[in-house]
Amino acid sequence: MIEMPMGPITDEVLVAYLDQTLSAAETVAIEKALGENSTLAARLERLRFDEGALRDAFSGFAAAAPADTIEKALRVIEEARTDTGEKRPVPPSRRMVAASLLGLLATGSLAYLWGRDSRPDMTNWREAVAQYHSLYSERTLAGIADGDPDVPRDLVRVGHDLGLEIRTEWLNLPDLSPRRVQALRFHGVPVAQIAFSSTKGPPVAFCIRPIDAPTSPLRSETRAELAIAHWVRDGFAFMIIGGNDQEFVMRRSQMIIDRMAS
Amino acid sequence: MPRLLPRLWRLAIVLSGRRDVADDLVQTTVRRAIERRGQFTEGTRLDAWMSTILVSVWKNEKRAAALRAHATLAEASELSAHAAEFDPETSLFRKQIIGEVGRLPEAQRETVLLVYIDGYTYAEAGRILEIPIGTVMSRLAAARAKLAERLGDADRAAAKAINHD
Image (cartoon, rainbow over all chains, first blue to last red; front, side, top):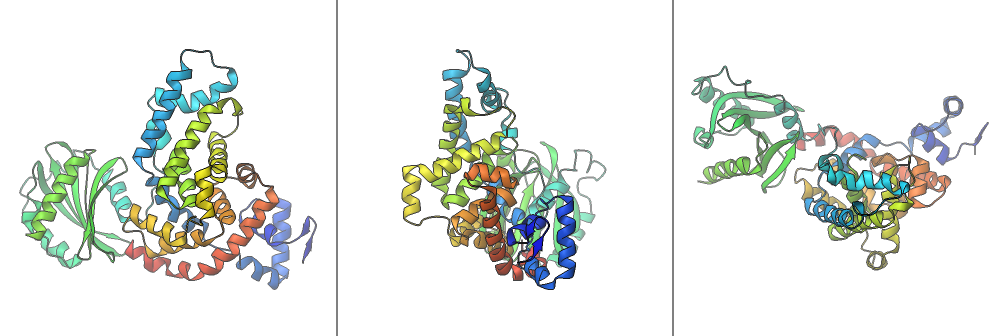
C-alpha cells in the first residue's frame, strides 16, 4: 500500500480522486504519486469508467416513470392536505414539508415535481428532433407557399438518401399542408424532415431515419413540451411532432401507417 | 426538489426491478413523508429525506422483504428489459450499461445510483442508506472496478452504438 500524507492510497481514495471529492492538497498529492508510480496509475485506470454514459443510460428511467403513479401519489398528498393542511394550525417544523409537498399541488406546480430531466438527451434522435423543432413558430414556414413545387422533388432526393420511397399520398393529412423538405443528419445518419403548416396552429414535422431496431408499435411521448407520435417499421423509425395535442399527432401517424400498409 | 418523484421511482425500480413494486414504493414513500413531515429538518434536502424513506420502506416492508428473500431483485435482464420497454430504441450500449449495473450486488447498485446517477454526495448517500461514508466509498470502489472492467469494451462501442439509438 502506498502511503500518502493523508494515509495510504486505497482504492477508496482513488475513487474519491476520480469523483473529485478530495481537497486541493490531497489532489496534488495523488497526482504526484500517480506520476511517480505506474502501478498506482494502473490501479486508477482499473477504476475509471464513463459516469456521463451511466447517467445517460438511466435518464430514460426517470423520464418513463408512469403517470398513473404520480396521480396516485398526488391523490395521497391531496387527501393529506384535505385532512390536515387547511383546518388545523401546522407547527413550524411541518411547514417546510407542507410547502414542499402539499403546496406543490395547491399551486399547480406539477411540472416542477414531475418534470422531465431538463438536460436534453442528445443521443436520442427524437430528442434532437424535438429540440430542433422547438425553434419553429407559426412564422417559420410562412414564406413558403402551399403546393411548393420543390416538395415533390425534395421528397425524391431525401428518400434516396434514406433508401426509402416517401410517397406524396402519405402526406395528405387533415389540417396539415407540406411546405418544406429537409435532409438532416443525426450522428451521421440521414434524417428526412417534412415540415407542415397546420391550420391548428404550430408547425408539425414528419421525420424518418433508418434504424437498426425491431418493429415497434405507434407510441406517444412528450419532448421539449411537444407532442410526439413515433413508431419503427421495416428498418425505419418515424415520428410526427408538433404542438401539444397528442391525439392530433397520433391520428395522423396512424393514417400514415395505414397508407404505408395499403 | 426538481424531478423528485421520477427520481424516486427510478431508485425504486433499480432497487426492486419490478414496476409494480416500484409504483408501490413511491406511493408508500409519499404517504410516509406526509405522516412523518414533522421529522423533516428545515434547510435539508427534501429529495434526500424522501430517498431515505424509500430505502427504509424497501428494506423493511413485508412485501419488499418477501421479494428480496425470493431474489427477485433487479436482475440485469429485467432492468434492460425495462429500458427497452420505456424506449424501444434504447441502444445496445445503454442496455449493456443498465445490465451491468443490474448485475451489481444490491448494496453497490443502490450506492452507484445515489452517487453517480442522482448526484448525492458521499455523505448524503451515507445518510440515505444509513451507512458510514467509508462504506459508501468501499461500495463505490468495488462497483467501479466491476463496471470499469465490464464496460471497457462498451466505451469503444459507443460511437458505433449511437448510430443505432
